[in-house]
Length: 168
Image (cartoon, rainbow, N blue to C red):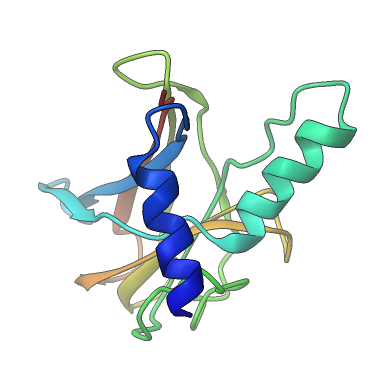
């Protein structure tokens, strides 16, 4: 472990090394049944999964076309902390994933996906995940946050942003 840490610091201090970093943020707006909108702002900044990073590398090697499938938003009631090894939601609601938009954020290095989910039941929503297909699939990112209580016909608009910063 100490050897790996030493090597990491050497790379960090080497001015010839370039670094690519990913930073994610999840924002939400709670749209109540009566039309009231509560802007919750950024509710979590975390965890790009190892599965997504491995998928990204695999596709950079193998794909000859762009891959743009990470637009399926899921939510759930799980409260276990998000970690890079996550491959699924903690406790999904069981409702269908919502397909989000896919655009650049405020600059060309920000991937942004916005999805509004209308709930069919009553839930204490505490987690969000972004996937590449409607069921199962690769979990790109998972966030756990303070509860958003919803009842049938309430909506949550999730805005996911992934900032990819080139280093050098």
